[in-house]
Picture 1 (cartoon, rainbow, N blue to C red):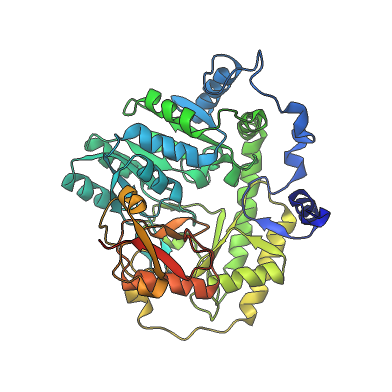
Picture 2: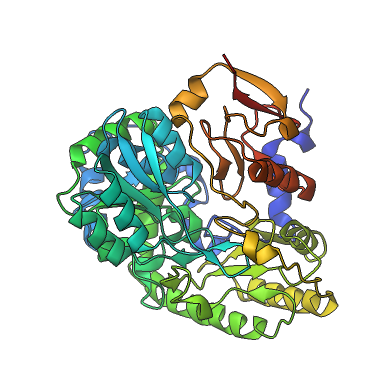
Length: 486
């Protein structure tokens, strides 16, 4: 029998009373001032009754609301998403490619993009982000790389990139859009982490302003909205809106939450008015904290000095990315210390850095606690002994030292007959399942790719660090599924 203290709602209520501060999504940061309209969500939770329209066949109030939202963003069409950005990415991919077709995709895409590739039986060409110095942090996508791949493969039907990345790195979307359009293809931008861009001039411009044809944004990540809420924008005539709409009806719930729909509308309404002023104050607070954190000597704050190098066109200053490359710590160590000692819960930790998400929902107390904790820790740390091989080994990810070799499509890799082997014995075999760290959900290896020695080493190293290695059917992490040899 489930005990009272084991119930999820009990744990959530207890946690909300604690002093753990959220430097993670959702963007409302449990700030009660931003959610006064929803003291009792049951009171506004309905279904498709008379007068309240239908998200999957909008003719009335929902249609008018989405048209109004499009006018706020400068889109031709805006769609409310109640299944998160994931359903928007799936719909954008399937709505711009034919079954069995080809897509050009940045390798640092979220796992939802790989699911879209699987569902539409696609072949993939990858464009790889640059790597910032010896930090192991992914930089931007170079327009010339996109141009070269499109010139080499005329079968590519659409292009998908991520900007900003989980770490707040913004690529030159405007130039990438020009390149993609010159080849007669549409550009999809996963802007899940940049939903706040349109509401403050101090932040980078949204991809929608820079020529992207389809843009997907997660409202819940950086704005005051419920987890699982997002929007998809279409601009221009390079994509068929009806095709994307068809897939939205497939990948979204047939019973969309009116609480979520009202939350999306309310979030945009708030952001288009007082939210713009709040964003200005928020930006000032972030800049003040970043200035103070530059006093750190061992921990390293990723900052604007990288703009113009490694494909970094711009940066989202709201993402606080701290590298441990100069210390004896791993990213997992720093994440754990901040949680256990200072009760600060970060968004993500990788091998060599951590990410704290800030938003307009943050309070002065939160900025102060994070600043004081990092400065105090920095004064207690020792320098790491230099590894002369570290910089030369980094290629496309924090610890991955080679690009995967694609032997078959993701669909073929998943559907093939498989067997389980110990992870350390997987070298030279073809992966039959995804392996990724979550967050951020970017695959180390995808089904159909050769398990190179460096990739297997990366998986083992992440497991030793205690990072959340997911995707493996074997939850113990000791074995991996590979394509059976015939």
